[in-house]
Image (cartoon, rainbow, N blue to C red; front, side, top):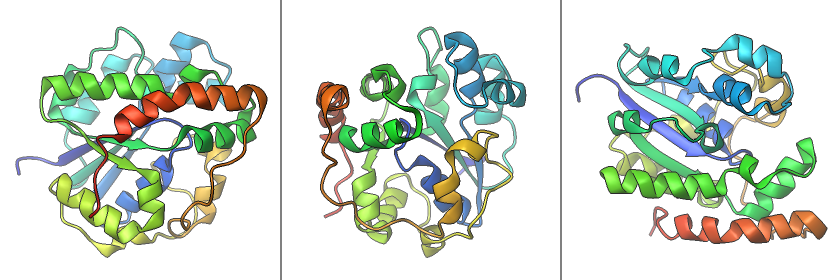
Length: 243
């Protein structure tokens, strides 16, 4: 392998993405990059996210200025794990650069995502949860080259060792059981927004157990999850099989 193996992990919010960043960061051969397009996203959308000004000040404000660190600049380790939110990839942002990385899509059932997001920030807009954009990006990348790997957070939580071993095999990196645990606390690579969003993962030392039944949603939240389910099921049809 020439240069670092750069893994771009694409998910929506509340999708186990930070726990996955902890998992990869525990390998011993991996450097992590946390949501590098967030500042550009906030500037372009004007969304009033928590710590908006601090986020914008902490990163390059133009998405083009982010790309060298993700594709050509030397990485700090043999593996580079890039945590990306699909909703950050706004119309007009060229995806050609993704041909230079190994793309993985991390998915989660919309009922769980909607309930988790609403508990933090209230009723979300559909675009904020990223389901449509995730399916759109998957299809676009699959047309350009090898189809990205898709892994469901339910499979990871249900059997972390089995799921992560299968993922490592699919993206051609060595499996290590160091990915199953990590020390509690924040990390230097965490975005400044971690103070708002990462409380649960900072208290954790490994993946939580399997999730129970889907949450019972009502009203607008239930309608939102129902509208998002077709896109989830479309991409879930391509998920990594663990048998």
